Image (spheres, rainbow, N blue to C red):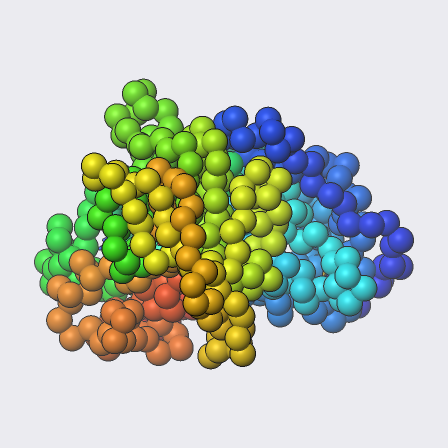
Length: 472
Ligand code: FAD
Ligand code: SF4
């Protein structure tokens, strides 16, 4: 609705509408979703809190500049299909983003109501519309229109948020797109990393269906760099341009004694086995996993929270979260920290692992040393400093290391002429152009581990630049 006909709404005194959640004790017994979503009544009540500002500050807080005022306005009018259309103009995965985006640091932080501490629950409303769309049959869902066929073909490497956003935008612009994914299912971290209880796989699959309905072709079990090299995609398979959205899935380890013991996992392997390969349903799915009794998870980000909460659901009696700074410095979303605490995860803050100890080849404990916080380091956070003589042992039979990831070299090492940083990330211009003409990149493979919506923004920016290249 244009600004000139949209009256600024009166501020509401109603508090932010809470989203219903399952009871913590009940939900740790299964992998079903924790947050239950708004029904129509709750969504309308929350949307009514939006002031429909003449100069909406929320939009600039969104990395893909979704017309937030526009879609919330449609909820106020009861035009949910219209709201979905507004959302899908800028975001191909609203039901996923409504669940996992850190809105509290982005659009909600920029909402004018945040000044008094109670911004509009933009993420919850986005999820409401995303779910509304997915509840319809595919033929009644919002599938964005594709442009006149350009006669050009683009390859997208990786089906995570950056690749999917790029593919969707290229299809809208009229290009034929094929996505190559190395795993057996598309979605990237949305399916292999983020657990079912935060983002059900069926949601991601259904959002990808809409892209397929736009004509995007998805080829799974295709490892670019092994099945085909980057050069073969253009020279032999005839693609006119390529986008690389291969993520940063190579796990980092601690480099301490004992890391090769049985019972030590990278969070990546632990979560992939559980999420994508459904190890928790063994023997129905043939991917067994070691179900420990006492589990130490090392790290303080979203990945550590996901691993700890997954371990709890697999039946661990005790799960410890071992982090070298204090809870205040944890990079994980506040909501995830809150949920982990509710579910009984024990936080061991200000301690850093020095050795994993074991017997007969299996983990029996994790030796950690106490830390205290010194002056801020280059990240702006107070740096942890060892407290001499404070070592202690955490009794555990499994250690999950969630320290972050790096770029996987499979693709990049077989790509002659592709400029990389010293850590193996791809160097790009602002629009995603790499050192090879016609090859673009975006998402975690460029920035290192970031967020879903930032990866999607990079994919969309690159798609627009590729459109210019393809039409030149
Ligand atoms: P990815 O999602 O990693 O996708 C890359 C895809 O490329 C993968 O499917 C991979 O299999 C494929 N691929 C790799 N190499 C090749 C190859 N050679 N050939 C073909 N295919 C290839 N962000 C949030 O915003 N909110 C969260 O709550 C959140 N939680 C997270 C939880 C976990 C456990 C993890 C690991 C990350 C989380 N993140 C979260 C971060 C976010 O998921 C990533 O920043 C985002 O997924 C990056 O998108 P991408 O497209 O760059 O890469
Ligand atoms: Fe204004 Fe917040 Fe509504 Fe955006 S979401 S239009 S900033 S009240």
